[in-house]
Figure 1 (cartoon, rainbow, N blue to C red):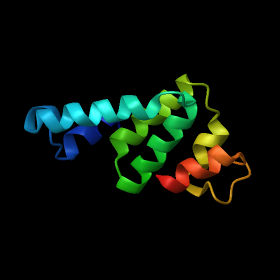
Figure 2: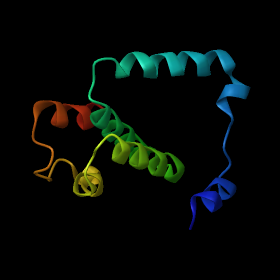
Figure 3: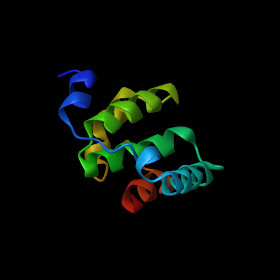
Length: 100
């Protein structure tokens, strides 16, 4: 299934239109949360959240963004099992998905 098909099959709310003040606050929170953090680590958190939320569209978007931030394919494939994977060994890499 392509991303275009996923977009058509799922009912999506346009939050920017439905709740503009909340959307603006969410974008501001995201920008503040990213300050001083490794962009690849931020994308790993986004990927973990997308997995937990079951959002294929977001998962696709954030894995592409993680690749752009220099994340390896091995680590991307193992985000779902980060606790067992030896690829996430630093304190930050253990804390980020745990707090997601």
